[in-house]
Image 1 (cartoon, helix red, strand yellow):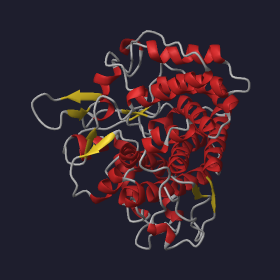
Image 2: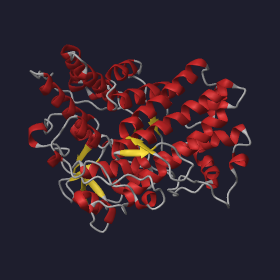
Image 3: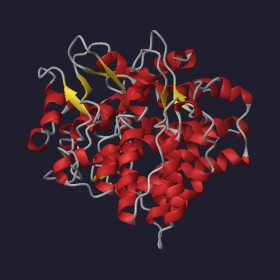
Image 4: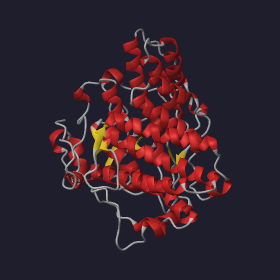
Length: 431
């Protein structure tokens, strides 16, 4: 992990992580005024957003893979003593408001949004707009990710942080809000390209302009704005990698908690949790990329892909995701553009590992769905394989109207830490 992220960790001691009242002040730590008293310390807060998002077992990155993987049948439980994971593996009413996997996503996402807002507010006051641009655009990535992740998991999400009894907005408005954050960041970045000093103080790995466009494409698609999703996807350079970086001391969180211990979860098998009618072709080269097979010990199926070692980088987005966003956007337009949707879909199906910046490639013959419904079903299938253990499958299952029987929850209950402190917390979903 980049040294700047480690330094930034000290700065984050000025806030408490877990308050659900959207009140993140800590009386034993420096005040906001003290923390944002200098450009360098404020930049450390911005850099630390990546650490909050992507490291340790309380991070959104780890817990999103965890929660999504169990309820969409990507993962199997390795130890029933892990009660939060046991709840998720059973699904339905067994997933309750005490679940700490869900509480970690909720609390940490709200904390990241709060910190990002403070960074953006500070940066807007700077006279050096080329320095401010780097801070705003970087912080906006993590604010958008946090808004988007909560909107994928819950029916409604808080509209703001930093106040008691925060109001809630619909999940679709949550995606729209994420896109608005990204639009502002794109405008700021394009108006003043970040200078080398601010870039040197931010973590390595995140390609800011491509990531802003990729996330705009993702959340526009989820919000049903297909024209915007397509336009943003066309602005992403698919040869450039953008990723969360790790090292021996600050490890990949899924590897650290699951892969290395073999005590929490492992992949279900080479079906990736898909029903028989959609199961991957065993010649698909993405299967050995994501799944290790052990012929001599249990479990037979092991985590590989982006979680196979402590230093394995995790992409913020994959080129295949962007191609599939284009395919879906074309397919859902009115009227549908079947021809271009099929072209983009087959770019993923025929892509070889060697031609992909991350080595993710099916290397299969082109597909030829006959109808628009068949085409959409194949897009869903390819997303489930290409984006395995990315945390997005539950969102996909709802969007593609997959049968409820294929998942163990549709939306999650609100953590007690929110319900007990916010009278605006909505009713829990039945499933």
